[in-house]
Amino acid sequence: LPEYLDMWFKRPEFDREAAFIAVGGVRGSMPWEEFEKMQLPVPSIEEQLEIVASYKAITDRIALKRRINDNLSATLDTVLCNLYQTIGNENSVFLSNLCSLASSKRVFAEDYVFEGIPFYRGKEITQKRNGEPISAPLFISNKHYEMLKKNYGVPSCGDILITAVGTIGNSYLVENEEFYFKDGNVIWLKDFRQFGINFYLYDYMQTPMFRRELEGICIGSTQTALTIDALSNLKVKVPNDTVLKDYVNFSAALRNTIQTNYTEILRLSLLTQTILASLSR
Image 1 (spheres, rainbow, N blue to C red):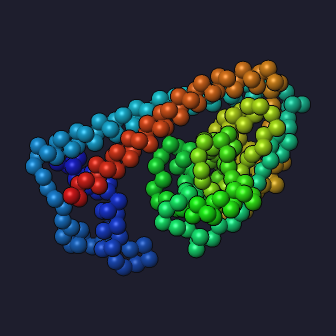
Image 2: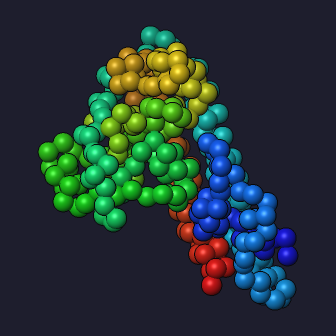
Image 3: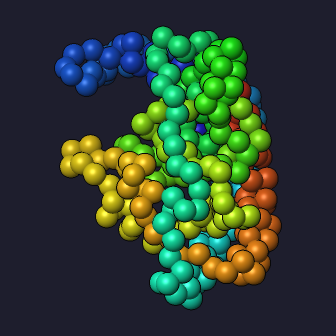
């Protein structure tokens, strides 16, 4: 079945085998003759149909949950933008007056271990934000993490991380979890001065308004970057306490649903990886 063959090509093992075969040039290429020689187990059509049907049921469920989350996020975006436009410019506040902005302590490549505490770069922060499984996880030892936690602090639930190099401006609202992150690639927003302001800021960071603001403060031409100083001096309009409280309650209800869907998407995505891996056996 074409669908079964398509699943075979989606396997990470296929990517590794293809990369091993690829030859020539800077980018590498796989000769057609070598591609034709690749082998795969071919079960009966009945078994292929069963595998494809199971895989499709899961991927359809993932697609449904993503559509629901897209609609919920669009609703939040609309409500936040409408609220933002009603706030006068006199209520603009420097971001540094609303929270602390920091980076992490440097972790070197030789500090990576095979298992332990997850270590995230900008790529992984984006995957976390999208509710996707980490494609190539990195780790530091528990001992190293505990040292960093004791001496410098680590992200805690409700903090915000924002990518600062490469794909700039992808933000992640930290859950109740343990991890560390790469210095220079990610900016850490913490110690929020006002109850609920972190949720308001996080929702604001998802809007086109925030994206436009970032375009004006990023530096560099060939390799743009977002700095702590530039982000600290970004002005944000903040509603009064009553309006902020009402908005945060509304946002929390939608965000809880979004997070529940992300949890299911992650579980289902891992299940698809298990099914794809089983094709080799």
